[in-house]
Image (cartoon, rainbow, N blue to C red; front, side, top):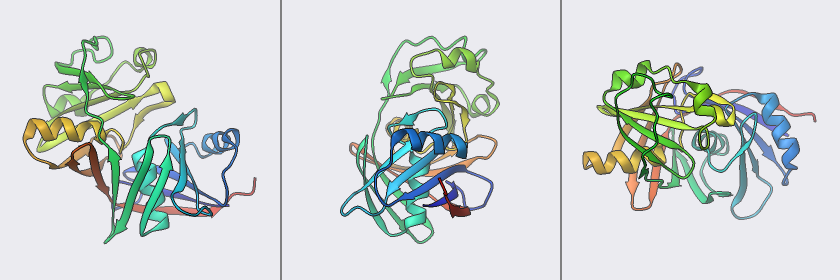
Length: 249
């Protein structure tokens, strides 16, 4: 089986978000895929069945659990396969296209619903203006971009809330964000495609524009272009393959 390591949402190696990509001829056992993802140690490893006709089955695993949706690993898969692709996933049918050095993903929109979650112990000292929830993630808007960039959240307390996943954002040019997910074994994700399914509808409505550019301000950093289209979000990013090889187990 061929595998690849791809840096997604970046145009240079050793930046963006690194993902494993494993090409399968037929569906694989979930326990085996989880073991491979744990061995890879990337935020997510994607497993795609390339031998099937029609939409390709696609699943994503962190080193600890399977997740229902992963943007950067889907971008990485499409970067490897090239062309136009349709995937069947736990989040429904997803479409993607690699063209002119960019990959565009067509994902379901996940607008946040306002909540009264108290994040004061998770984000000590942060001026939180809005709290909400998407399908899987807590969502917080803070006063300014500098707060996002310098956050030191209490990850132990976050780990034991709801799904243990928190997206923090603020206005900055268009917007800046960071994503913390100790609940699924990832203290901070470098660039999170699926998080922009929340960010796009929120900021598009607030800024009055459908097309935006978001910066995820992790140590590796990354850029995601978004286009809001009704109940869908089109995410675009670049990617670089840094390693390829074969699995022998």
